[in-house]
Length: 118
Picture 1 (cartoon, rainbow, N blue to C red):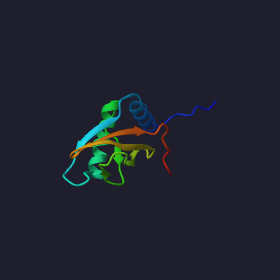
Picture 2 (cartoon, one colour):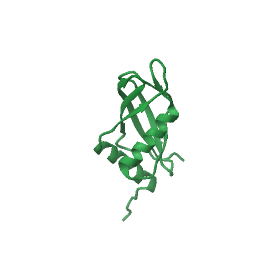
Picture 3 (spheres, rainbow, N blue to C red):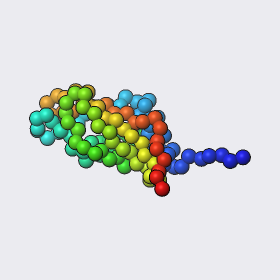
Picture 4 (spheres, helix red, strand yellow):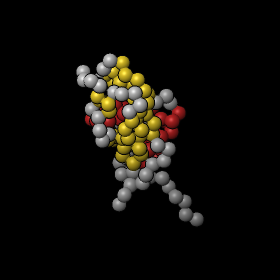
């Protein structure tokens, strides 16, 4: 009988998804002065990577965000977490409040990873 096994990357992604679903998933980041404030895509990516690693006890995953996060309540963006094997997991980021130059946001990983494309 054949037993399917999850790859290491998918296992890590599953741990990240479970960890972010079980924990309070919010963060705050102070930005450079602008109106409205913006958090660069690079800073958002690195902050999410650190938060996801802390939530799961795993090494920091590779996270890529396609655009800057505008500090306006309700603004959302989608980032992508990519495992070593190429499998991916989407992460939704939503601005919950803005206090001056500080953007507060919630984030949630998708419940299911997408397998690597060959």
